[in-house]
Length: 253
Image (cartoon, rainbow, N blue to C red; front, side, top):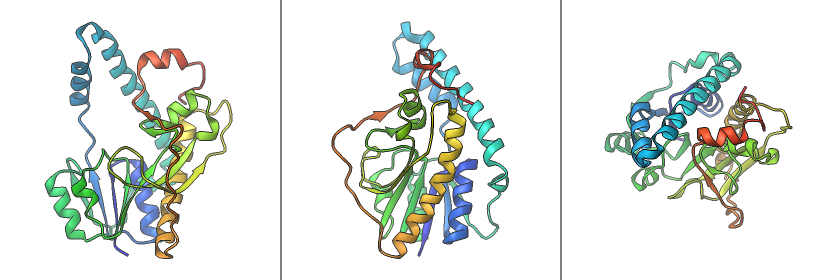
């Protein structure tokens, strides 16, 4: 089966690639470059009125600081298991500015994938969705439909929803995390767990469910369960003001 992983370059995605290639053989990994932090900051400020400039700057500093702390913790925990992120020598890798760029779409078509596994990219356009012969699956770090969107582990922890910390494998449709559920599994978490610990466990679970989904596709037994229409919510990036209100509910690391 021609299997392609479409993702952003990170230790987590490289661990995912290692797992899938070892168990099922990837035809290629296509990396999407992360958006420029400077451009994101400018866009964030422009979206807000001038009198909210201070809060916008606080949000940017908070997201940068939290991201660095989480990345450091994740590298210390996942690094040895992922062998430092080293990819197999026989695994072709491509890098594009965006998964939706014409050159990326053309490269994907040349690979002739039957299945594309998506892990942590921006919202994909229809041109990408139409590439694979069979399907595109998204490995989502959240339990849908209650936790669609971004930073779902953060929001579930801050809301005290320990039974909603987990990973979902979704069929990709136009929109945000709204496709039918293929696989879903929650973590065994308790009060006092840190965000870094949750993120580490999610990365391990995400790779396991991705590999399991590919095997079920080969066996023609992959489930396809429509999402419930009740309790649907999409979450965005947390901000500094939100963290000030919720910081006593859990620790980052």
